[in-house]
Length: 416
Image (tube, rainbow, N blue to C red; front, side, top):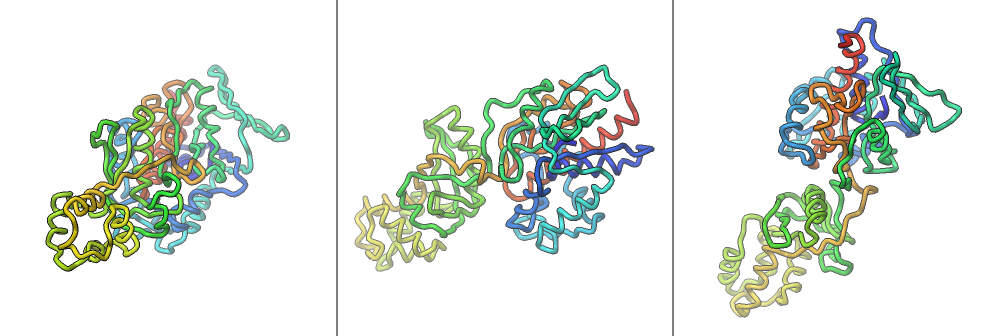
């Protein structure tokens, strides 16, 4: 097992817990990190959003929905809840649909996983330099350490659970892609940060609202104006751009669109469900009321309401009945479709997951075994699958890791 993150630990647990394996296989897990489980510990604000109550293939991007669904169905949300309950970790569902441990601490999740993986030998820091494969040998794989003082490990099966490139301080440096390529796999041409905050043009008025949050609809449009994707959720203004679930969910779709269409861009509707026409009609009927007060009554924070008025050239305190028609319409247009001039994102350092990777078409979905290199299994973030914020990426890790670990263990005891 190469990698002891969420997917790697799940694979190790599944491999050592296989009831059909007598005697149980010898499972060795290596990881280059000095401290295991860094991503688990920081997830969900330190509480670890273990999964979501409603997971399906439509919450993911990358490989085809059909392929993603086949893996998710082999270890679904009820399986995950039961698995953690068996480990002594009770989960609770919050209003958002996210499932957290009742202790509200990620340490509960990591400690339970490490206890459950005690049947495996976990070596860290043990950084891998290369993986050799000789198909005719009894132990066809040699996992070679970067530290020359450590011995190489020979194995019948290898599971690649190295992760991607997000949060590099946790040890995710993309080395797994190089190993996969050397073993015959391809990697998507575009590997990029996902679930990452966005950066706007320096000095844009939105950056002056740092700390302000609102529920909005964020829409992605092609360079020709075609609607490509939208999300309605909380948007957080920051000193450099926008963050929060809405922006982070959208980030990978914007990056993917701009890869082929540099003119693709975003706009934000600060009053989801409203149109320019309905908002203009409401502004016409303000009478002595002010546009700023109206926007605040609709739930927008005061600083945001004032900033929208000023950006549209409207005096926030001007009574509605004296607003010039063109000015009123400009305000309605801005509130409903504020252009969001994104210049980039905050990179892998701030990303929660990686988009791109090894295509699912290169693995057998019922075992996660490589179609290119027999005996090699892949799971987790190294594959071309990335989900929305809210526990979906952990569910992918649990599902793909369970399938890979179970299949690898069974294959050793039931060779075909």
